[in-house]
Length: 293
Length: 276
Ligand SMILES: Nc1ncnc2c1ncn2[C@@H]1O[C@H](COP(=O)(O)OP(=O)(O)O)[C@@H](O)[C@H]1O
Ligand SMILES: [Mg+2]
Image (tube, rainbow over all chains, first blue to last red; front, side):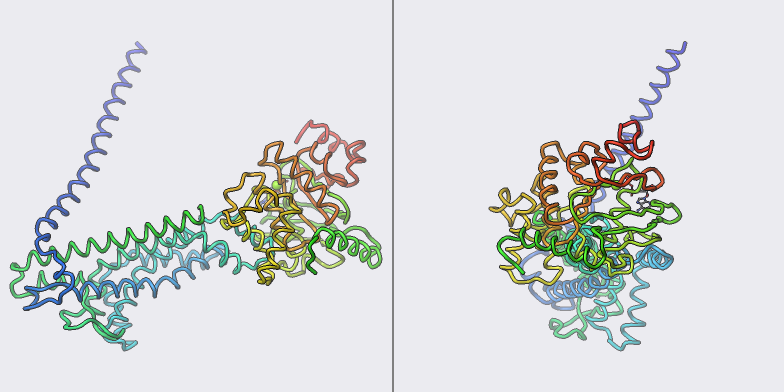
């Protein structure tokens, strides 16, 4: 009797396991299918637009011909600018949060603040950038205002990654340095921070991937509909890939004719994200190997 | 100040320090605690510990685990206060000065430490040893190289690593890493060396080398070592302090006397291995 009951129970467990397995497999597969479908439609629609001229020429005839060169360069400027502006603050905050503060009320308040910042919709950053950087600080619609806005957007990402990276450095290292008479700051600078660099780079990768694809934060702060030359100073407007795609897809008089250009530009954007990720990952691997950490 | 033979320099300096102690303080204790107590938050880890660490020889701190050995050791170089919410009471004097009121950074310059688990920095062997001297402002390459060689020799590691000082310290074996830790501490020329169970992660052969090195170092500076290994304490220490549960100092004296005829029954039980 008992034996029967257990074997019935086991049979049920086996079935439950099979169902769970099937569901897990299905959801994994569907994620891949969705990704595949998106990639397929992007590639099949956009690949015909890709050429060296597409990457190196300015758009022509109301964007129905020519390339995306200025948008490509603009996106690069904006993203690199955002990382350069954000990183010092992020690293400083991360050091403070993980090494100096003793975990009191302030730390908790700031941590909640950082986490909430990460959840703010990007259009809000765009409006904030317009109100503060463009108007109050009088920067105008400019490369600088856009980079600053994007810097704010990626700040929480960088802080969180930085803090995690710093906290992952064993307490041992810190103590070893302090026991030799190093000050806290010296220990952070010479032992903790260098060990945390790979982790901080992970944050930079995430930040870059986020910043480069955003349209809303730059729409009112930096982006130009069309420019006949590259930006030369920080107060110039810039074209940017995501905004350029948006404009081609919605505002151009015959947007249906430029489908392949839109998809081509989207492909390039995707390629840039992949390339930057790849670059950062290789760099991180090299640093890690050198540190053996 | 820098000579080829660092050992004689420090050997002479321990003599000078002993003379100074005898003349000025009429004592041979380099560190003295008086009713020293220590708290982690509300938990008391040490209670009214009074003892004097003799300048000569190796002093072992023993006792069952959790009785406050590390806390006492780390009080000597002010490492305990890195944890939040700690509090000390009583006094500790180092060469007659109030250790608890001194600048911790200056204290650690004179009182070095070797940790329980080897903790080389993820840097080259050279940069590990040169770390302390660099902290204290030594930049001159030749001077650093001299200190590195001297320290590695004193820690009995030089012959094994002299041809690859540029290699990562993390590539060394556990025993080598621990001797690297000793060399790293020696490179700032401390007066006292604290060791917190330095052999607990090592095999017998590596342990033996550390013990030999420790004996040799005791000719040149004061060594305080935490160990819960009775045989080890018997082999290497001249003096022994036994702490018991609750952070009470139960016994302090020469190792031979304490081992042969412990004063308290609890210590006798501990030493005979009945608990701990
Ligand atoms: N960082 C700390 N925070 C809170 N309590 C601690 C800390 N370190 C040690 N203690 C407590 O203090 C007591 C003594 O610890 P310790 O000095 O490490 O003992 P031992 O080295 O003899 O094993 C133990 O009860 C331990 O739980
Ligand atoms: Mg301990």
